[in-house]
Image (tube, rainbow, N blue to C red; front, side, top):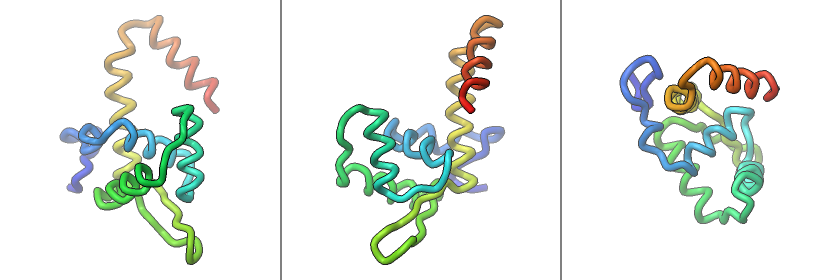
Length: 119
């Protein structure tokens, strides 16, 4: 089994990641992106500039952990995409969060409404 464990198995490596790294995984769950597109998404979320010195080392670490795959779009641009283990890490985070937030039928209905309005 890989270092990033299945959500049905042992604890996921995602639980050891920073919030920033988890946010990168969530962004890449939508679609593969190049670095500057990820940077823009993070800046929209945080409402402040994200510098390259923070973004790229974190992307490299996620690649090293096998959660993100890096490929070359052209000589100057890399594309990043979520691996299966990365997707499992995102699901693990969602499952853990929901296990803490959903405490009854009312909250379950609120979450269902959020999901229905998200796509």
